[in-house]
Image: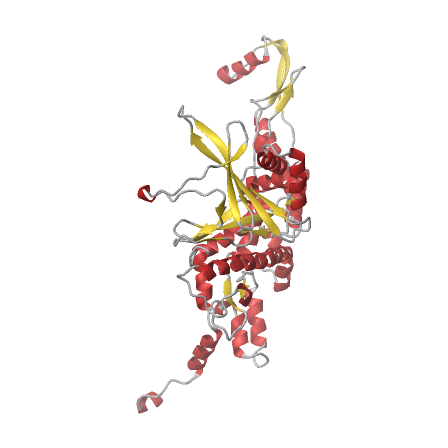
Length: 495
């Protein structure tokens, strides 16, 4: 769900002048949290954390008037993490290894610029983990937002901001230009009675400033009161509205746009869970019911005739305590068991598993699916759908990083401790994803051997599975050295 400037104009007319800001904010949040997109995000997060629908299943019975929960009946709640495995497969394949950022022009050395961007994104190692977190969030929620801000010390921070707490405002329904972002979150405060009270904070970011709101006890959203700085007590003060950032020298500025960048999962912003959620729920339910049936069979059903007791509870007590039951002269007790249609159930589970991987575009790594030694062609077919899903993520990651780096370029241009080079611009960079792919090494090596004399040695070395991560030129040089005869040191060596 998104908001447009036309929506804001309509709401201003609808709610009138009094409490207009509060009414609009409340309406935006309530509308967003009732939307299908918000629910889909919540489901994606839950299933990634193994909180499946089966968790809420209760076994009930009808007592003649109402349905009641049967706490004595077996109620297994087996969860199968297909969604988590599929998300991890896609993210690990795409950005599991650290991507390479380099100049689009081989003759331009932008190493210092790239290192600066990595530093601003969190540091040499942390920036890669943030990229992975960004990708996982987009996979689970359809998109994930990130946020740039400058702390009181003038340091730039780039953080991943949960998309479920972000409401974007665009210029039109075509989502061409992001004109505002409403970010909200809950905080817990201690009141005068030493009791915890949950209150909601809201930040409204536009092209030039940010306005801070706090929910009152009556449920209204009011602008927080600002305060002057108090250097003696180390209080930097609080502006409201405030500029986007204020540097250590006291100068203020804005990004010229809301400093938020979204990473889309795909064109329709659907989560990776949505196509397969009913299938996963069916798989969980079928396996859980199977376990329930097995547990019930162990509690053998007794067929009674001429039972000399008052009720069934007394019968079960005699059976458990005395290992015997009382019957009249014509009485009989027979233990009954029920056969479970195991083959039909296994067929259904296999079909569900196949469809989950098919429609979820993930790789089924079951041994009987992959085979003992699949060929290179078979592996390509096996990974075909995952490759398509990975391409969607890569293309959207390219656009998101370009927007992020363009914002960072603006920060670099105004801070005094970074001197930008001549070609320091996001447009001069490209990113290469160092994806993994399972291959049939024997086939690959055989193909390389047959290409000797047709393709140059460095190209063949670069494709060789045992030379992965090595400089092809250095490998070729090492091979040439090994093939040269060792120098003779004496006549005895020659003999």
